[in-house]
Image (cartoon, rainbow, N blue to C red; front, side, top):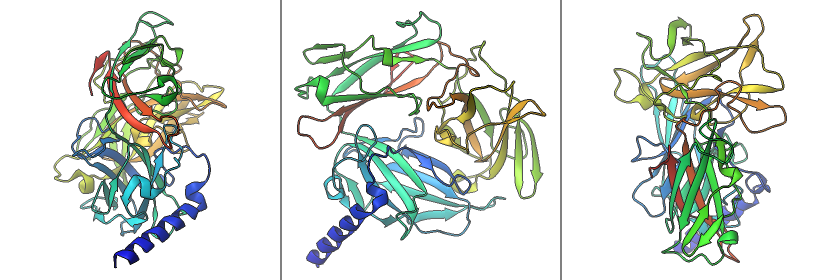
Length: 428
């Protein structure tokens, strides 16, 4: 019986590796939904984290990673998933599945529940990793491919997360006193990697660093070289790639009920089959810093007078309006975790020439949301805050520093350290 299981497992791996969609070249994976009109509210977090919502867990740690999303088709669909190991650049590594996981690929998501008492019916799906079918064996980046059962070439979403095996410590700061200006529009990151308990023979070649601001991939700093190497301390300082524009605090909105207006809600109406939320008009903030205790782009599902927001929160059409003249030479996008920080048709604002305003209507689940507007110049992939939100050194931003390690002849990038810094304070 054990021999049959082994043969079956090897055949599954062989079939999976031969699938052209899953092994095609140099795709960089990122968290994204390919059918945003049907699949909604994708959230990735560790199960014991109700604050940070970081797509990160420790190797062989006690926490687990939870992936949840909704399908607006109320009837149960059988979704399956496979897991890919990636290098620091989020491209598929050379490891085979048997090297990075214990268990099988192409497993069905069995945890689901139908919505209760909502005007918009949906099915909520939940996947926890590791589980009784899968355990991850190595550190690094991972991408979960989700697709209808039996259709691995029909990917409906990808979910990215990281697994860290802490071997080095990282200490860093954020300062408004930068090599570009002094307490004006920029923030500069400085940090030190301490390898006291882990030998790194050649830090300049064996380490890869990635710094991410507010969970955004478009302006991440990569391919960084140390400024100083002093014994066990590897210092990254005075690097132009580590100077970020400060931006402004995220705008916030909240709608938990159709009986009263929440934060930034101007009106609530019902046009069959949806409730509609009209937000107050937004205006450019390129000349004003707006202090607020935001959550750095995150969103939280919630509803008043309900016991289980995952299945009892309703979906409303939320209308965003940005009152300003049209900007030439690029497009304006909504930005935040609720659009997975991606620039696409789902997040693009549309200019209404008659009303002289940018507009966008998005179907969102009840809860609390952070959002802002980014300008992406034509031909570019990096979003800019300056034309709309402005840039200010005092903005509270969150920076995640990832430290990867691959020694000579190594076959994949290990994630050996991570640190979150915010407003000059080490917090993770």
